Image 1 (tube, helix red, strand yellow):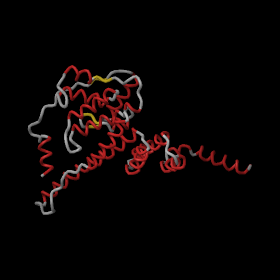
Image 2 (cartoon, helix red, strand yellow; image 1 turned 30 degrees about the vertical axis):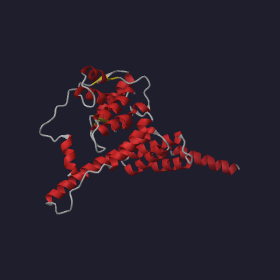
Image 3 (spheres, one colour; image 1 turned 90 degrees about the vertical axis):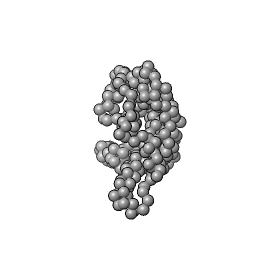
Image 4 (cartoon, helix red, strand yellow; image 1 turned 45 degrees about the horizontal axis):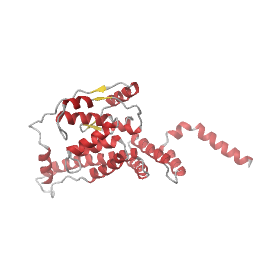
Length: 274
């Protein structure tokens, strides 16, 4: 018995002495989660989501997807959001591949079979996971779901539905959602133009309770879309600083005017269906 206790103590000392290596070794952390999460509890789901974040930082997206999927299946709304984001990225890769395929096809004079067409499978998977997360009250997912609808990435553009989800996110204190609502009011896209409401929503102040659901974390902010784009690091840092100091952030918005040299959404959709 005494020898067994010494052996256990030895293991603890080794693990303690290698604490930094343990914490920075994703493979070891994965094993620990597997050993201790035979039954997936909410706490385990959070750890699984964290493992997805670790692999994301290391740009190992297949491993990140694996852990996000496990956490999402266990009912973790933030993990559902991050899994949806990964599907959205795949969908954007599909667009790039289609554009390259069309260019190659036309350069070959149509000799390589039919011209590639748009596929929405990954965007529809993103919609599914964003919606699951949004329906559980996760504001960043509400915002990104609205962005899918606003830009027609599920196969049809629905600006009214987009505005509904952006507004839901904004009411929960989500920064990207607030700006998307402000732009909708400024441009009259999905809701009647209203400069007073546009001004109101273009000034954001963090809610009293800033938590995971607000989407204030850097990784979540980096995966949240404003006007179709992601926010640069400095802007994300500014949002977090404003939240910590309880200071408002104001963005000056101007209506987007159509560029006659660019194709309209309908024209793009018609070309994709040809």
